[in-house]
Length: 475
Image 1 (cartoon, rainbow, N blue to C red):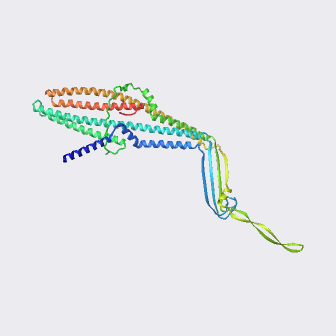
Image 2 (image 1 turned 90 degrees about the vertical axis):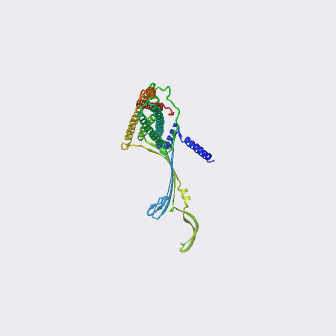
């Protein structure tokens, strides 16, 4: 029963481990997507794009009219002017003023139109920069991914060589026991096994370092456990880097590489900068309108009161006679708040024209500065194209050299394998000693390792050319 339970637990843990490993298996596509979603540089470029979009929206909003309201309230002391009656007084007066103003620009020398155009070019340049950063990161991830695959293949090859050497040691011991080889030949095989174990340790370290580099690009913690999905790929049979020419690849790259597009948009933005600076030479015309009202605690008014009987003595014919008559009265009272607001309500509309006459040369200097901006943008565009041309030249030359290196490595492996097979046969017959066999095996091991490196290097060089041709980087 205990054995059954132990077996079930082992199966459960094995299944869980298999599930975890499946979840942690990373393909090149997953690595690239994760890097693009988490890389800090990519996030910064995306933030720059959003900032440029906001600037463009702000520039477009300048075409719309503006509306503002102003409300003020307070207490005046000393000799001041009553805001409602415009008379001087010395008593404390409470006041409240409200104004609603609106304005719209009619003509500003093309300033708003060109600002919107410039902001649009800046947005497109920022988007192109973000895309270029994403492309560069994808290429770096692909290189790191291939480096891990190469390191793992080298480790696997090193471990296989250890097994082969141990098998060779068994055969040598049999020949020694048979008296065909001297006992000292065993030490040569032992030394060879020790050296190959050392190379296996070096290969394992290279796997760890390559994996660490990949994790850093993916913004993963160093202790994160991950495995690389090994795709089934081969060098394309029709791959012919010698058929690539600089003009053809460069022509395609200038249309697909975002860095070239970004430089072109920045040049257009600089050209609009000159038009924006020239707007300072032109007059500006705008329309405005406003509504206003105010309130004052000193604002009072009189209302008719009841007639009052007034008696007065007068002389009529030498006699004093008392005469009475009714006289109207006036009652002084404070005007209510909303009544004042209604009485003091005012409106205004008008046109404002601002004509620049002398500005201390600021506009002229702004135009000159903007023209220098065009020169700098033109130089930046030329530099970007020249840098791209140089990179393409290097990529084509590296691909051609990598192909020749792989072909030479293939021939070297074939020759070394034939020599090793021959050495094994002669060693079995006792025609050569173990040292000569070990030398032949080391030569084959070095040739196979060089071929492995050459294949991965050639594959990566081909992917770089695909990158400049605007193709998706995948295995």
